[in-house]
Structures are given as structure tokens and as C-alpha cells.
Image 1 (cartoon, rainbow, N blue to C red):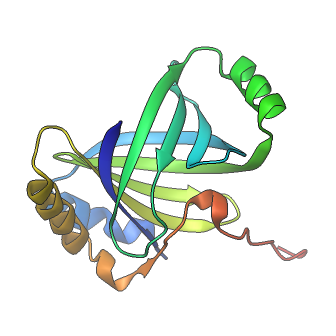
Image 2: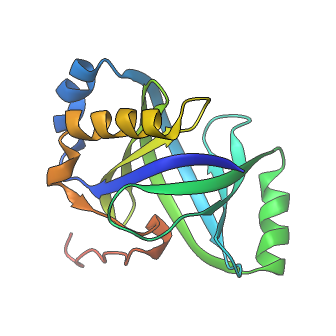
Length: 175
């Protein structure tokens, strides 16, 4: 299984990060609309990610502890051609835990994916994923902590769990 180092925080204004991302010399990779369907399963987390990009739907299995600090995650990815068929099959076999809809603005700094996420009914978040791609664990930690510091994420509210485990906020009736 693949491995990465992750960190997630709630963030009040994703727009305020633009200048810090440019100072970091991160590369803007685009905006993706995603729908993650999480399925009930006895171990880890299993989700089907459907995107608005053709040919970019994925079945993702991952295991990660629920801790507030940066944590290691192991995962497996499988590209999906017929997501609606697989979704129906997994819904029948396992049942749906929840569905998360988000807009993700993706930036890259070396091996670190910087996700600026606006999640329906949950708010705005920054998620770092430093993917292990040939570098040592200490080198990955150095890169990860450099990005975290450069973006000032230590001052934000850390999130220990998956979006699928956060309580959804109900909008007031007059909003």
C-alpha cells in the first residue's frame, strides 16, 4: 500500500492563503468538484470519489489514525471507469455511510499536495498530503513541516477525523 503524511485544519478564509502559496512557490493545479461516497465497512475507510474531470473517478481505501497532529496514512487507489455501476454494487453490498460534496483547489509543492477544500455543510479546510515517492521518512517530514509552517497552519484548528465523521452544520431557515 502507498503511504503519505497528512494534516488537516479548519480554515476561515482560503483566499488569504494565496500570497503564502505564491511565496512558497507552490504550483496551482486547478479546481476539482468532488463527490465522495463513503461506504460502511469493518476496517479503515472506503470511498468512491466521483469528479467533474473525465476519467478521474477513484475507489479509495485508507487507514489513518484520528489524531490532531500530522499522521501517517496508508492507502490504495483504483481508477474507476463505470462509477455509477460500482456505486450501486457497493451500496447494495455495504451500505452508504455518508456523502461528502466539496470543491477542491489543488496546489503542489514538491511531493506535498495542498488541498483548499470548501465542503458543503462543513466549511473551509486546508489538507496537506505529503506523498512518499522515493524520499526518506525524515525528508518527507521536513517537507511536510516546511509547508505547514509556510502556510501558518499551526495557528488553525486541527481536525483529527475524515470529513465523513464531522457533524454537518444545518443552515438557518432564513439563510
